[in-house]
Image 1 (cartoon, rainbow, N blue to C red):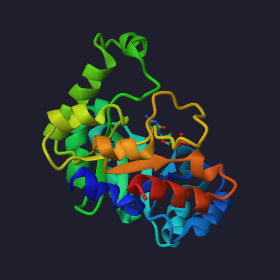
Image 2 (cartoon, protein in one colour):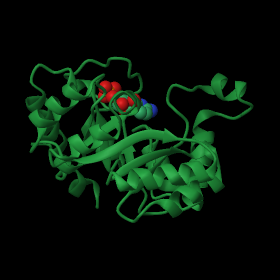
Image 3 (cartoon, protein in one colour):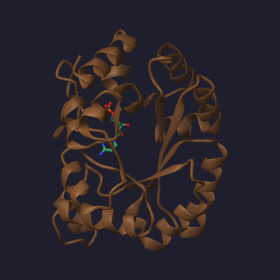
Image 4 (tube, helix red, strand yellow):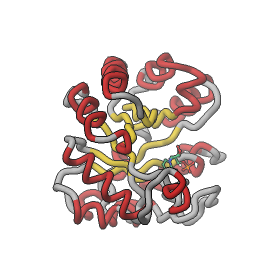
Length: 237
Ligand code: C5P
């Protein structure tokens, strides 16, 4: 879909990060947003606190689930975890591409067609010094591109990327890769700890397929209104 088409599709592209400490708060918010949001992200904090039951409970509100567990282990263990996530009917699941080709291939082989595996390249909390201390002596952008290409060769169909990386990734990778970008902030929202962000509309214009947004919605006094404003800003209406 071209940029114009994607801008009009904002409601289906928005993924709200349920970065909350407890199941009851997450379920309350998902119920408030039901009908306005098609996708929720459940990450390490909530999953560790509330387990697979929280995935079922959020899915029961009618939304699709992005399970952000950033798997990184031996190929057999990752493949088994992918199978377990598929049984929970999640729609997206993250794995670390730094696990290498064999790990990524094992994950891809275990994922049914309806589960989109997303590869994580270099975390935005890492800089060149972080890479160097782990023995990687090259700029972050180069390492991110290398891992994205490794993922593509191993069969991955989706990536998590910063909105600033999307244009370069689109040029370097095969067509049809789905790109999910966190690190977006509407102009009216606090930056929180995000540093190199773009607005949601800019991220879609750069070529992102999905946006992950947390605190501008979850910490807003009226989360439904926040979602509606973001959707209309992306659509340009
Ligand atoms: O609240 P906020 O909009 O900053 O939340 C962004 C979400 O995206 C969080 O769940 C965060 O962990 C995740 N994320 C990110 N930057 C990355 C990767 C993931 O902000 N590079």
